[in-house]
Amino acid sequence: MLHRMITPTHCCGPNDAAPAISRQPSRRGVIGAFAASATALATGSLLGAAPSAAAATAAASSSDPFSLTLLGTLGGPPPLAARFGISSALVINGRTYVIDCGRGAVSQYMRAGLSMPSLAGIFLTHLHADHVVDYFSFPLLCAGVVGKQGFQSAVDVYGPGPSGLTSLLADPAGQVPGTAAMTAQANQGFAASTTFFLTEHFGIDPTKLLNVHEIMPPASAGASLANKAPSTMAPFTVMENDDVKVSAILVPHGAVYPAYAYRFDTANGSVVFSGDTSPTPNIPRLAQGADILVHETADMAILPQLGYPQAAVDHIRAVHTDVTLLGGIAAEAGVKTLVASHLTPGDPGVLSDAAWRKLLRQSAATADYHGGMILGEDLMRIPVRSSHQG
Ligand SMILES: [Zn+2]
Ligand SMILES: [Zn+2]
Image (tube, rainbow, N blue to C red; front, side, top):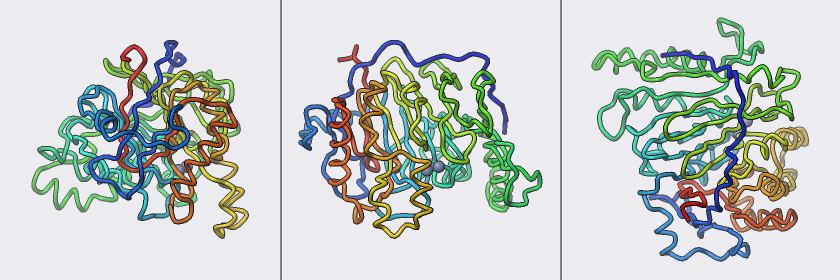
């Protein structure tokens, strides 16, 4: 397992070129987790008109050079039948990148029909359980496995470096682990499986097929535990290859440090993931002109009605983004489409999909935002296309 700390020496902003609106209606993936109507709420369908079946089929073409699949759309750790944990996948020219690995991510990856041998990268926005609980399932279950269910080429992992805080648990170093230590300790924790199964028969150490890159903000950001997401910092590059450039920016998420939002820029469009964040100018800065912004959200107004203690309501309000603000964020960023994900509450028995869509419409109308607003659904697949492609 290779550990590399990324400490960028230069900063760069999002693409200058403004990609065209991605108006393709979305559809469910190969297996829907629950029944609901199509959810594209582009400018022309803010009143909830569903896309035609033909359009939905066209939208799902596997030949798209760039597509977004929502593997799970639930916010928070408690398991729920209706939605899997937060996780998304981008397929870029046949390579697959997973962003966050919430509950069920590896299963949803297979249910979405994604190719495990095509897995090229895993990006973790932060290390809360609802974003990482299925992370180690990828190497533990798939590393070295022959065929469609595994990968034999090294997968690059990008995630936060250590915070420097002392752990509440007595781990040997006494520190809260970053992505590298979390990976190493998970590997140690599962050593019985590796020893008695993989190594016994195949000699495979799962982490031998991971390249872990820990991300720390550049010094120029001026970030620290006391100033976790400086509102004037510039996005910085964390990875770049022939297909994609990935940029990051710090976001404020309560006590968490560092916590990142990521932007993926390609020749065929751009997608931004907010990670978990309270409202911050860093998101519109990172997402400026992007085709799609996948943004976390919570309906704060309903939480007190659900029996949440006031302290829990106050905490959620302080570290997440209320749904009423999404239209304004999308408008300020100038994104073509906003996809609401990491939904709290995620139980349709508590807040129905129709009620969520109404909240999104109201938010867009209040902010005079005329781009697309999509309610995220598990296994929803959305093609990403920039303007020059029509
Ligand atoms: Zn979360
Ligand atoms: Zn979180």
